[in-house]
Length: 233
Image (cartoon, rainbow, N blue to C red):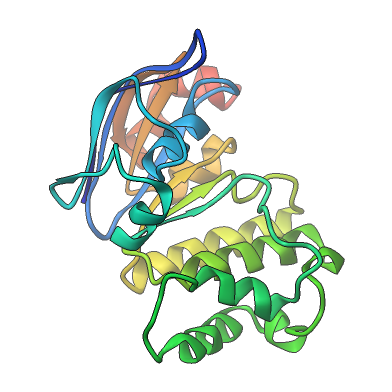
């Protein structure tokens, strides 16, 4: 579904991503793991059209997308649930969800919002309340729901469990697995390497802007280099 080949991305003179290569197969959860500053978030921002690569290519369903603006990448079927959630705090739950569907012109938007409320009942119960009044976990639910409203084929998560309680972390990870089981392909960046690789069908390790290891989530969990560098074992 997604092919990233030899990706290089710079902020001015600083090259944050030097040579990242990976693929995402349809129906999988694929995780990118690595230390802070490794280039993981920059990679997702480039896939979603927020940044332009210096070198390399990104293909989605066989078509190049690395020169498309962000709204065209979204229209092609890729939604991005960003680090820090980036909600509109003064707007209601319902208004935030509707913004996730701003490119759509079909008549199924209300039905999709109802599916979000079914997945996250607390959002339905508080749909008229401002997003800024919610807890971190509830805001993450809303950020996921907003991304779902675009009906993406590929949904990207950037640090979805950051700053959450252990119970909420498990709920968010369970939700991501449910989305995969319902047919949405997932690409996820996650600092919690153990949780990410336990969930992932496939994983890639990014170190200093380069892809250094890849394999199934189970194989990477068993790799001594991953255990020493990211699991403290």
